[in-house]
Amino acid sequence: MWFSRPENTKPLALLIFFFTFIGIVVYVYGSKKRSAELEAHRDIPFLDEKQDMKDKQ
Image (cartoon, rainbow, N blue to C red; front, top):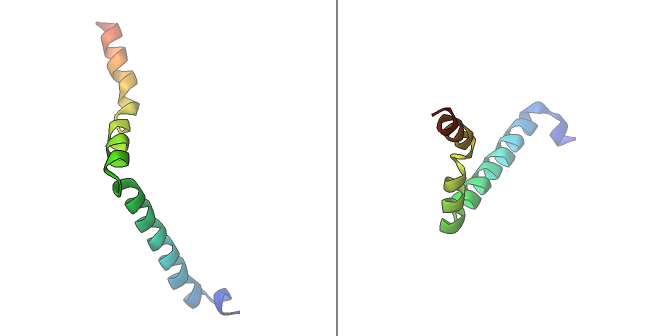
């Protein structure tokens, strides 16, 4: 089989991962609404720290 040889499988895997990455990037940044929503969610891990700082004061 042609895909059982590493010299054939590596470029195929590279193409699969590359197009998957491009698809994710297009999905995330393709829509302004979705992009703005995801940007709003980026600070979620730090919200607990802000709340803890308010509680300590």
